[in-house]
Every structure is written in C-alpha cells, then in structure tokens.
Image (cartoon, rainbow, N blue to C red):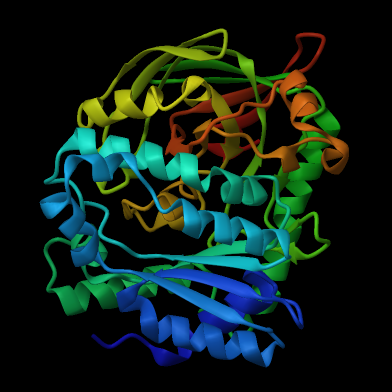
Length: 409
C-alpha cells in the first residue's frame, strides 16, 4: 500500500491544531485500530510538538474482537470494562482531550450472533455513559478522524485489489478532510466561517419545527425549547475551540423528544457495530418510534430501539446539502463519520447539551424540561437526498424554505 506520507503528515498536524486543538500541558487519549499506527505515530509526534503533557493510546484489533464472539462464555456479553471507562471519565474530569480514529471493517461482526452483539452493545453503552456524557455535553475538546483500513477499503471498493482500494480510500479521506490544499488550516478556517453563517441564519429564524417531505418521507420534527444550532468549530466548556468531526459538513441542533410526528426513510445504509442496517423505515408519534422496519438488519435495529426509554426518540437533527464534497464523491463509505456528512440526518438517543442557549448553566433536569432526550445511545442515520425538501416553521405557523432538492435555499 502506498499512502501519500505528506498527506498523512498534513492530516496528523491538522487533527492536533484544528481537530482536537490540543493545548500546551494538556493530556490526550487516542483510540484507534491497530493498523492505523503509522498515522497515530505522526499524531503523537505533532501532539508532543504542540506541548502535550501525556498522550495515551488504546488500540483495537479485529481478530481479538472476533475472538470474544467465537470463544467467550455467554455471560461475557452482558459485561463491559467498567474500570476502563471509569478511568477515561476521570481523565476527562481532569481536562484530558479525546481523539478517536475510525477505520475498522464495517462488517466485522456480521457473521456473529445478533443477540450477543446487541447485549454487548448495551453493556458497553451503559458502562461508557459517564465518559460519553463528557463528550456529548462538550465538557472537553475532542475530535474524530479516519484511517483507510484494509477491510473497510475492500467494502467500499469491492472490485479493487486491497492495496489499490486502500490508496483510493485514503485519497477520498484526504479530500473530504480538506488536507489536499497547500494550506489545510486556512481551508478549515474558511469552511468553519461558512458553517457559522448557516448556524447564525437558523438561530435568527428560531424555527419551532422542521418539516421534511419527499419520497417515503413526511416528517415534522419539533425543535427543543431554547435550542441552538451549531456546526463546524465548537467552543467547549473548557474554553477550547475544536472541530469534533473531520470531515464535517453539518449544522445541527436538538429536536424536542416529544414533538416528532410522521414517517421517514433512510437514504443511506447505517453501519452499526459491524452490521449493516439498510432501508430503515420508521413512524413517529409524539416523539416516539412506534413502527420500525428495515430491508436488512431489522433484528439489530429493533434491539437498538429497545436499548432504553430514550432510544426510540431523537437526540439530534442535522442539515447537510446534497452538494457536499462527500456526497459528490458518489461513494457510500459504510462509515457514519463520512456518510452522515453526505446527507441530512437524525440521531436516535442522547442529545447534545451544547445545542441549547446558555447550556453551561443548565442541569439535566433543565435540559429534559426543554425537550432534550436522554439515552445510553447516540446513533446517526441519513434521511436526506436530492429529492428531499425541508421547510422551517416559525412559532406563528409560517413556512420558510430551508432546503429544496437537498440544497440550501
């Protein structure tokens, strides 16, 4: 495999300076697939150059992950490493930054028992919740980037040899992450400025509801009281401005957990914990999914929806134009970080407290009273395309075009 080392170096530098925006004297936790170690080493170098105190890395290996499903006893799938997640939560309490590198095989667990996968996902989500809340509440600076894993690349480009597929996926990652220009940092600064313009327009309009309509979709999403649109660079509660997702084309906010009604279809496959869920179709009544179906992965979908009370309600609504650079590649990445930035999407489960006005002063009770959802899961899936229109509805019931044929009006 011949991945351009100069572009890898640019991605590493960008991930530290504009992704997580690591500060001098700050610690950093990195989680990554073991095959991404060439990128991780470059990131660690850049982190220490930026003045990091301690950088700690955790690696996953696909064969070790599969070994548990092959040989572990049944009780194993109702347990998770509480001690590890408690330690990560403690690190976040001490202002440690977080960087995740994705790149695993999206079909890694497709051959294994769905009930075991669901049970393990539930146990892991429960254990990770204290640490995850530090992220969803933007208490720390964090960021996600990607590595072109071999199995992932083969899934995206099944007709190519693995080396060629990896190189092609690497090029797509570099392009989507805006590292191919001479000055990626300036490119990201300009992109963040564009996204800020969109969030300011939406916040000035202060819509009470969004109405989606198109093939298979007629959905009204009420927005939480005192909601706030955000996108691109985000200033976290520790005062550091980071880019949580690289790439990112979205602006997003918090829907009202009890004010979603209608029907909606997914427009791209959802890759969740090693299983593909395709052609999702759901019906909402008063914020709750009351009917759900999918062409593929239905068993897992229904188990996810039963994770807890909040799993059938929305925690995020995001707007992404069909003309986004990721959409224009024509590639289905089978990776939420990329596919969610190719289309408007919604997320089941936990809301982001960041998406409320004066969010730093709000308690969990305040967030709930404003319509924010609480759950152990947060799963994005895509509902936008060039056939979907979106209107904003103000408090007087007036409609304002927001998207037409998948594009900003």
